[in-house]
Structures are given as C-alpha cells and as structure tokens.
Image 1: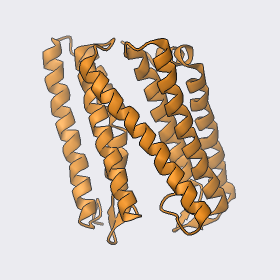
Image 2: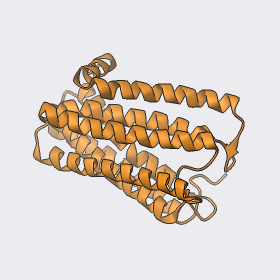
Image 3: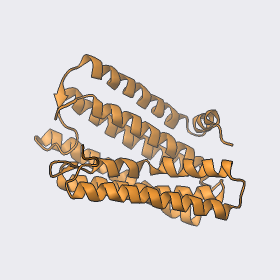
Amino acid sequence: MIYPNKIFSTVKEESPILYWVVVTHIILAVGCLIGVFIDDRTLLGVNVWIKPLKFSISVGIYIFTVGYLMTLYPYSKRKKNCINNIVTWTLLIEVCIIIYQASRGVQSHYNVSSPFDGLLFAAMGLLTAINVLIIVLFIFDTIRLKLKTFKSIQWAILLGWLIVLFGSWVGGQMINEMSHTIGTDGDLRIAHFFGLHSIQIIPLFALWISNRLKRANRTQIIIVTVFTLLYVSGIGFTFYQAKQGLPLLSL
C-alpha cells in the first residue's frame, strides 16, 4: 500500500525545488480563487480568474505527478534533476503568462491581437512543445527500462503517457483552429483535459487494482488494459462530438 503522505515526503526529498514549485502553484490557485470573488471582470462571459485558477491546479498536479514518477525511473540523479527542472520551470512560466494575461483582462491562448500578445502566445506554444518532447522521452524509457514498481503499474504508466501524448495532440488541434470550440457547441477542451490527466487516472487505477487483487500481474495487466480501452473510448467519443460541433450533453 502506498500512502499519500509517503508520496509527498518522497517527492520533497527527491526534488525539493519541484516540491516547492508545486506549493507555489497551490498559492497561485488560492490567489486566483480570491480574484474570482473580488474581481467581477469577465472574458468571453467567464470571470477572468477562472482560467488561471484551473491551470494553476491542473499544472500543479501534473508537475507533482512527474516528480513522483521520476522516482520510479532508474535514472541518474543528474538526469532526474535535469528533467524535473525542465518540466517545473517551463510549466511555471506558462502558468505565470496565463495569470499575467488574466490580470490584463485579455486572452492568453489564441491571442494575436498585438505583437506582444502574439509573442506571449508563441512562448506558451514553445514551452508546451518542450514538455511534449519530455513526454516522448518518458514513453520510450517506459518501454525500454524496468521501473521500480509492479509490471501492471509500469504498463499503466506507459498507457498514461501515450494518452497524454494524444491529449497534447488535441491541444495542437485547438491551436490550428485558434479556438477550443468547433462550430457553436463543440468543445475540444474535454478530450484535451481527460487526455492530459490520464497519467494520474490510469496509474492510480492500476495501483488500486494491485492493492485490491492479490493476483498475478498478468490478470492485473488485463484489467488495466480493459479500463484504459474504455477510458480512451470515452475520450475518442468526446473528441468526435467536438469535431462535429456537437455539445457533450444536449440539455
């Protein structure tokens, strides 16, 4: 059994800088939440602080996930520090850009209304591209290396990274459209969100299965695979709906 406090202490011990950057994201999220209540400005019908609030939480979770998963890879200390720092600082800068643009009351994504806004949007794209390359590295290393965990969980981590890569591709589709909406109601953000967070959901499911079922790894791998296929089918369905300009739910 892996306990949450054990995970937090492990990440803090292995990568103190990453840990404190995650704490910084929590602080930023609290600040954005306060902004929601004291600032009534809206952008596209939504409070300007909602977007940076969501990104602060989501990116903080992702960075922490990377920090913990890094402890499972048989990397050298130098390589771990290098990858952790790249992920940590690139994503922190991206979140800071989103918060800065929110403070100005303008869009951060798809905003090329001025050379300055276009430069910030391009910088965000570059920072994201760097992290996609890190994801590709994780995919290859998860295939070729033996991680310090059960086979079923390593399999889940591999599947998680593959789906994260797909989620990143969906993000690229939004950039091509210069919008997250297709038509009137299609919303690519749903597939993008669940794609990116598969690296938490699928390994956590595998961990739960390994703790609940004291059976052979092969059985656990089959269960994790079936769960992943169902999960990917759901993402694929929401992506298809969005591309057709249809809402997720018709009310």
